[in-house]
Image 1 (cartoon, rainbow, N blue to C red):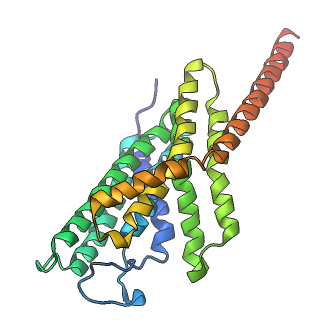
Image 2 (cartoon, helix red, strand yellow):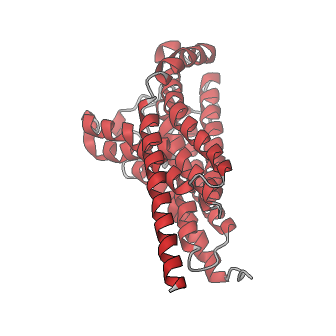
Length: 305
């Protein structure tokens, strides 16, 4: 019979949620001045832009999504580890993640609304649509962070490993931001870009080794994870391209068309990390099965002796 969570364990879970969400946002918080805004009411130099907890800009949409999503994933993994020694409820961790995301959203969107002139009614329709679009995207990211928390903390290895695999590409974006926060205007460099290009493949391959292939229904997780590894980078690139085209002047139809045209082009180039993930997963699974069989034979020999 499972011991019910104590009050101290609920506090621990709440702290795990808060720390996980803060860790997700941390690479932005360290140097989090609001990016320059095309619709800013008053002309402002980059160094004079206010501090915000979220990267609110159409040019930073994939980064915003990754930072928020990974807060839930980090918290879920921490809950999973904590459960090895004590009973830890999931809902306090989910509450902790939600509180951090709510605080960050209120602070950041308050600053954005003020700068766009929305509080005083000076902002135009484009500013309102821009504000609403970013807010809607942030809400979706926060909901997916809760899903990521649930998946990675799930007692089923298949569900947890799939959660890790689906977060692999956002994790690469998160790592790039860490380097970008300290690299200055020159960017993180070609070496970091190369590492981050292959990193999701390594993470997905390792997650699938942990997932295993027995029962065979776990192969469904393999298919979903590999499809996610293939499609997500292309989706990130296409969305960022469409939203970042200043020449389109906020024409949503044209932006969507530009993203749709680029998506298959990028998709055709993203097969190499998938191949790496398959190789790691297959070879790692073979080695794992061999080690398990060897361990079973050793145990049987000890019992019979």
